Image (cartoon, rainbow, N blue to C red):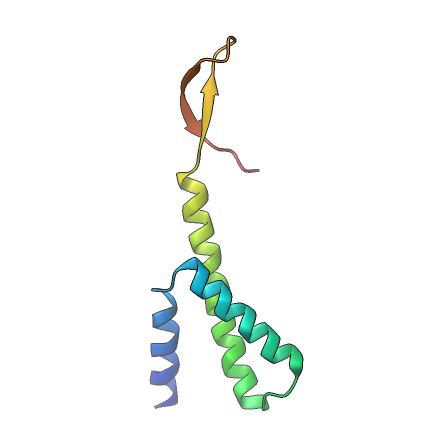
Length: 87
């Protein structure tokens, strides 16, 4: 039963927007840093936090893939776009 609940909780992470996922992740970090959460609950929310972190990373990668750099010629006139190299 606990495994089903955990699976459902992690599955709903996949539908969260970046803003919701990061807000929940920040809340989890704060709770864990406060140190007032029982051990078993700490483990559970830590696991959810890991799933939220992966979701945020995935959404950031998708956003980066959509960003393009505008290219110009020597006179500054726009000639097109190319993928943005963020490295």
